[in-house]
Length: 79
Image 1 (cartoon, rainbow, N blue to C red):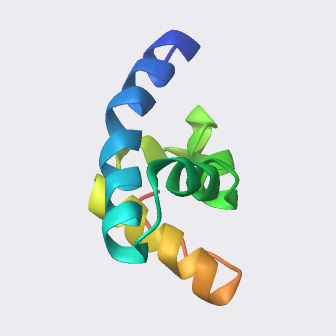
Image 2 (image 1 turned 135 degrees about the horizontal axis):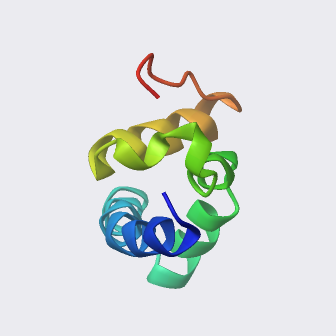
């Protein structure tokens, strides 16, 4: 996958994840985006070879919450 295609895919995946952060953590959009974009999960999501881009927004949100709660991420087998 080209960097351009990955960027386009992330532009589709990110908004629903950020909305779930807003809804469940009751933070504003700026804080939600800051939390997500500064996470280890997002750093891995930006790497095409991680294949995390194929996960659903809900799964990505759950991994994000796991990272915040435990400080680590238990990536799914298929990732």
